[in-house]
Image (cartoon, rainbow, N blue to C red):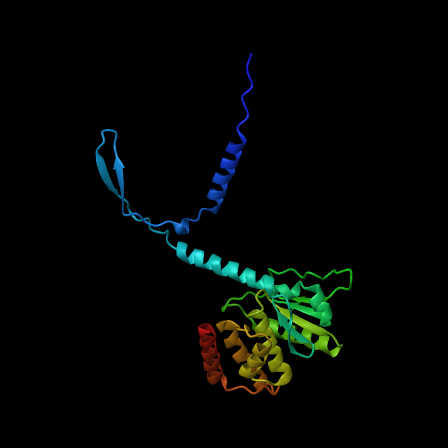
Length: 254
């Protein structure tokens, strides 16, 4: 007859929980390198073994830094939930503002420009009354082509405001893509130069900072507006490009 094994003592479960907690809390960053380890063999002889310092894999530090930056960006996006007013009927924000239904309703926002393919159009089919969306396949890359999206964005914003609506222009962080589109709209609709339009946008949202490629394209856009007689006050092409480059360098240092 096989006898049943006795159940472990309750203290054993407690000890196991403590061990598991220590394992989960373990952080390799807290380890320090030890140059040598003293060992004793079976004969009682003592030896000093030199430890070789482990070298990180190529690109590991850059990857870790990118992951930390992404985590910080996601944390900011969760806290950044309010649309910022740039002008009557024109707001700018990030992913958090785009999904804040209460804030959108409070500000009378009826139209949304979504310049972040990774962010869904949350309320396209909202039962309380759908928002009208313009989704743009635009990525925050200095090599991305901004200019083809400007006319569609400008027409969408102008049409919404003409009908008494209000527009939120957003990307993920509310920093580069959305700022570039708002600046372009101000340049076209208000006859503003690049720096004045950027200053007005930053007054509403201080983090507004189009990437260097977008700034150069906005400078070229200003030249086109001036050539077409739209009233945009911008320098000639070389000066505008130098201005955009200087602005981009200044933004990177802030």
